[in-house]
Amino acid sequence: MTDRYNIHSQLEHLQSKYVGTGHSDTTKFEWLVNQHRDSAASYIGHYNLLDYFALVENESRARTKFNLLEKMLQPCGTPPHRPDQD
Image (cartoon, rainbow, N blue to C red; front, side, top):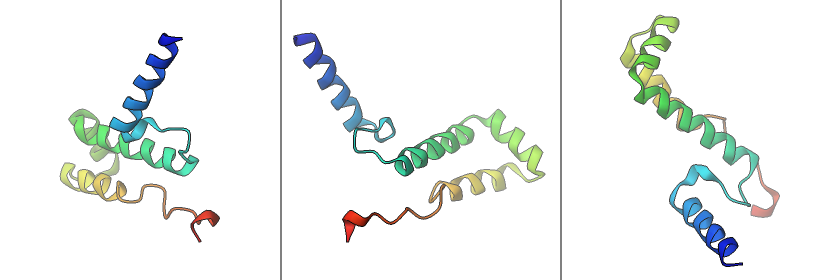
């Protein structure tokens, strides 16, 4: 019984520490936004991938980085209307 409680408390700590891990109330939209933002951050941080994207798009590395940063604001568009927030 103590192992189950310990694992559950570790999971709660992980979910409170890192936003992208989600929780039971995470919506599909929030999860998708986190995935897109994590991917864009990874592309920006790995310069070889950034160079590859810049080459494919025929843009400079700085412009490609700027475009990825812009997409992080609302990567999946505006959030859907939730009826419980009225």
